[in-house]
Length: 202
Image (cartoon, rainbow, N blue to C red; front, side, top):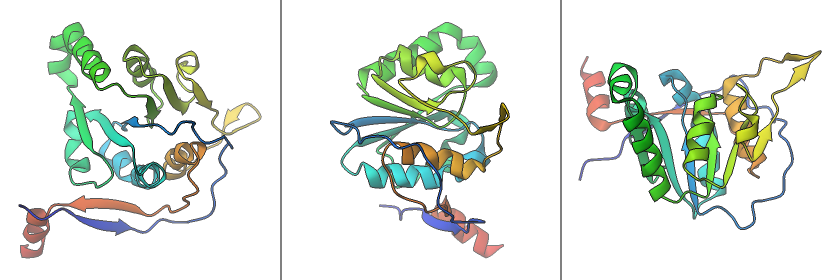
């Protein structure tokens, strides 16, 4: 059996406490969680503190990650997910069109998720989870998708304008909303042993 990927810690600029909305713990705790992942490779790394906190807070839950196919290598080897679910993007997805989209919805419905956590702020991510019949959908109220969410987090505003928030804290705020007390902002990059050896040989 191949050795698991080695996690490489990436020190954060700050580990200051993060303000998050208070909420009662989920009752009963979720059993099947779908975490919708960011689109970009860099954001995948910055999501690791949130993903780690979600797993620590819900150790008994079955947790799946939904992601675009091209970012899957960033998640392979992460110890916090039980299942990685991918979907196509770009030209191949456009050619597949409605069939591809409905196929994804059907796949998610069959897995009977009870809770979805949306890291990206896109309308599409909320629509997918709503159509998949997921009862509780947690995410930031962005992109006009508030009516699709059961739990809406409001990004910080001052004088009607969004206050820039480091994306690491932005993602971790979702885990804290769900009850996590984790404040660790250390990011991790998981590298397969074969890739590590190749780098050492250079």
